Amino acid sequence: MYQLFYFPRNASWAPHILLEEIGAQFELVLVDRKSEAQKSSDYLKLNPTGRIPTLIDGDQVVFESAAICLHLCEAHSSSGLVPDTGTPERTLFYQWLFYLTGSIQSELMLYFYPEKHTLLPEHAASISAVHETRITEMFALIDKELEGKEFLLGDRFSVCDIFLFMLSHWASDFAHPPLAFQNLGKV
Image 1 (cartoon, rainbow, N blue to C red):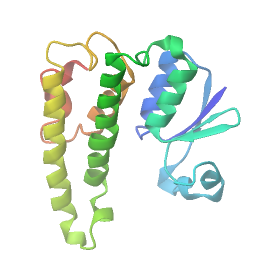
Image 2: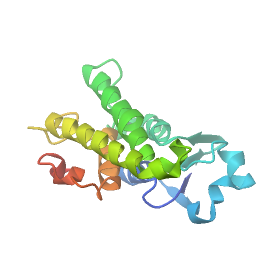
Image 3: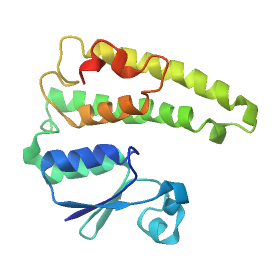
């Protein structure tokens, strides 16, 4: 049985959804960010980055949401949530997964935690505003990509769609929230 160390609506949301989707047996272990439990010595022994999520699979410990999801999909290959190796669909899958996690998710971290990216606290609001604009442009690109499609990979539901769902909900307070876009609103 898997153990997923999580915090609600955190980056653990995608692996949590995936565990449900593949029908795996798992236990949720709350890491209370409000009390900074992710910085405790016990948690840091599991995940030296002090970030959430962390997955325990037997003797193996995996951190980073995308890494956890890829690990789970390889362990449950019959789920079909990752295209077959060596196919054009697999290349497209990697493209969108890395765009979602390496670009949009990274920009969202700047938006949510601007004070960590400046020595001048009075600049925090402008950092968030700039990143909201950038992220909205990224969601507009994805909205265009979804035109005429049900999922990012066309007619196939994948881990990319799980990440897109999570990130879209994280940005729900934007002036132009992702789910207000014509095609993203169907996600």
